[in-house]
Length: 215
Image (tube, rainbow, N blue to C red; front, top):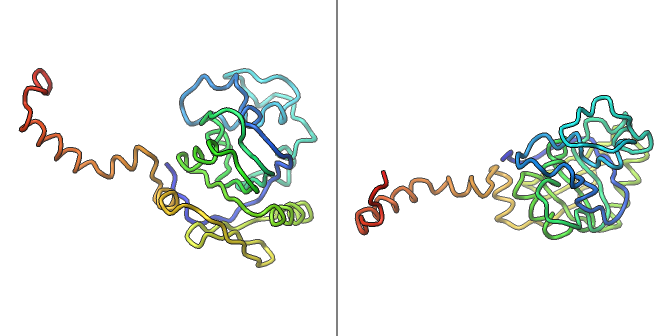
């Protein structure tokens, strides 16, 4: 999993409440369990004018000219500004996979659906909760300034605007540690590899009959 420390990037809008995971990555694209390849279908039903199909080449599909992520000014965005209850609906991990594969490293919203919020941390995506009036301000500033960039400092737990304002956010210390060090559940387990090996060796001595036929 990619670590997250500090980043500065263009902010893009998802300016609607209750965006569910089926809107983030529609159900027909959930056949793969790989974490990559979903970015091209992020917000598929909003982003394109036709119906997307699994494994389809999206390079020639007609784009929705009214969808913000198709605007030139938001190309290369790494911060997504969203509204309340972002990520509601099903528990599919494909939603943070798609956001990450597209290029987003951080989502800022007044609130998130709990399962989506947890899944973000497990997949290297930083979800930040800020007060609704602060998110309103960020939306206004973003719309007013093309190329609007936010700096997100996980160490300092702050979001900084181009104008110099800084907004602090809360994060669980364990989740912060995992993101700073790029540790998902597998990574956390591998940190204890030597202790696991030592336990297995001792277990072979204490109960050798359990390992008959095993190397």
